[in-house]
Length: 56
Image (cartoon, rainbow, N blue to C red; front, side, top):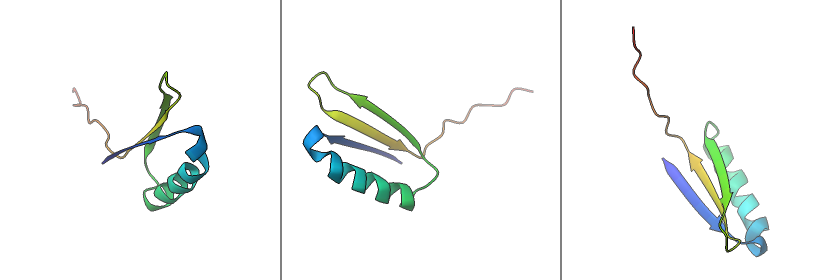
């Protein structure tokens, strides 16, 4: 599962509340954030892990 949320500085409080709720529902996840040149923040939540083949 992958979730992408975009928000602006004005929406930060609402985003933090939403992020907190998602992390309680799905605790074992990876998070990544970035900011676009226009100042829009992007937050990614992922439960998918890429499996790598084991070489013996």
